[in-house]
Image 1 (cartoon, helix red, strand yellow):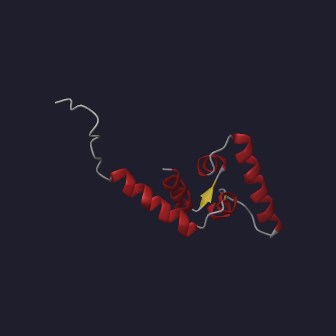
Image 2 (cartoon, helix red, strand yellow):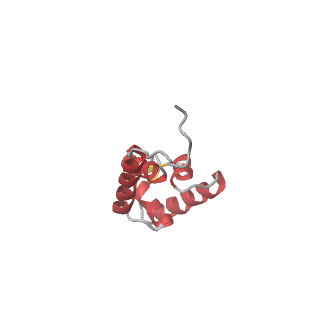
Image 3 (cartoon, rainbow, N blue to C red):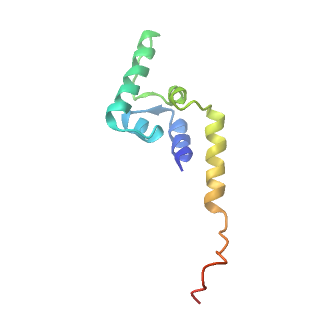
Length: 94
């Protein structure tokens, strides 16, 4: 489920503090710190932050590539739709 959230934010293209909290499960203070770190790097490079920081910059914090996030999200989707097998040890309720 976490990688589906990450994939959604990557597809959005930018991240605000609230998105960072979802991308890297953390509280507001840490998400704000990450946002400010990325914002400082972008500003130092002579660019401006408009809607939010580019979402791809968050990948450094989770040590995954964008390709890995997409692959893991696909696995999560498949796992979520996989049929379940009833437990043989549980008595039938029918």
